[in-house]
Amino acid sequence: MTEHDLIIIGAGPGGYVAAIRAAQLGFDAGVVEKEEALGGTCGRIGCIPSKALLESSARYAEVQHDLKAHGIDVSGVKLDLKKMMARKDQVVKSNTDGVAYLFKKNKITRYRGTGEITGSGRVVVHGDDGDEELAAERIIIATGSRVAPLAGVELDGERIGSSTEALSYPEVPRRLIVIGAGYIGLELGSVWARLGAEVTVLEYLDRILPGMDAEIAREALKVFKKQGLTFHLASKVTGANVAGGEVTVEVEGMEPLVGDRVLLATGRQPNTEGLGLERLGVALDERGRVKVDTHFQTNVAGIYAIGDVIPGPMLAHKAEEDGVACVEMIATGVGHVDYSVVPGIVYTEPEIAAVGKTEEQLKEAGIDYHKGVFPYQANGRARALGHTEGKVKVLADVKTDRVLGVHIVGVHAGDLIAEAVAAMAFAASAEDIARTIHAHPTLAEALKEAALAVEGRAIHI
Image (cartoon, rainbow, N blue to C red):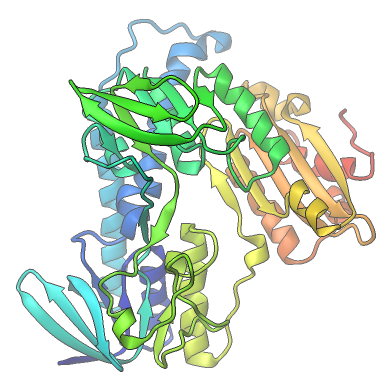
């Protein structure tokens, strides 16, 4: 039996970051991971490869459609999908190799296999070469999440697949049907639409991007439609069948849709099976997530959980913060994550980013607010870039002017939201942002102008 101060099951963003922070704090940490490459779903088959393809496909689309406006006439543009995929794979390898380097640098012991908690302070690693028993006073569950199933739609890993398959199609599908208009569906739907696929998106709700600000979602929908994506909202998928190399998708109340491939992107569910939680009596909630207190402690002493397996947004950066805070609480009794300012970003073109409350949430809570909106069209830098679609919206409390939410649809929205997150973390008012000097010409000026617009004082509209 090998002993450690701390054992972490899972080497995704939550697990590997927790391990590094633990090493910095003097813990001897052991990490159990079933995949050969470190980095979890995000690093291997999620965040990183999808962003690589989003970047490559955006450049391909730009050369095809947008460069003429800049006085650049390019002809004979060809897609080398195999090379594009190879670049994506190399980006992934660079990131996973980077995590492996950090493990070596911080003297973190890695165990290859699946982890099962067999008792107090005991973890068995089930590996290809047999079982190995580990011991530690504390164990952190960081096993992440997987694609949530949909009744009537069975994944076959070929014609009907998840984001994993959609990141590695061997050819551009002529007709791609995407089930789900959330982050993953819109991002990967955009990738293949840019590369030439006819993309149809089916969404059960009557809107795209559930949970995001409705006004921003409506603006984004208009842009996506201009880009050629077809949407069927308020559409309940009841089945999908493969025959003759095609997929027929059954939708309640409308004619079946026929496509070459189907991407199921209706959400994710926590990975808690096989960990021994039921035998140990670790409590789960109604959605199968591990119940934890404010210190990430489960109801069983010495067992903690972070990231996608506990309540909260299933986002890599949230999992990272969970990991750091959990380890710091174990070491010092003090740690903190402000879940009110976790940003969410959709890496489409344009990007969509948000932090804090939406208008709908403020209305439901009965909170009086002022709204400031500034269009990208009125921003000089956006005009120079040739990306003028979108807007920035700032929501502030009527009495205190404290910023309650910021919502952006537009180029580089994912970068712009960072200023809003920092401002809200320190309880800034809209006036604080408005009176902060923003360099000209920059896209960041749009946030300043939206903050000014909260009190009707925007300069450039």
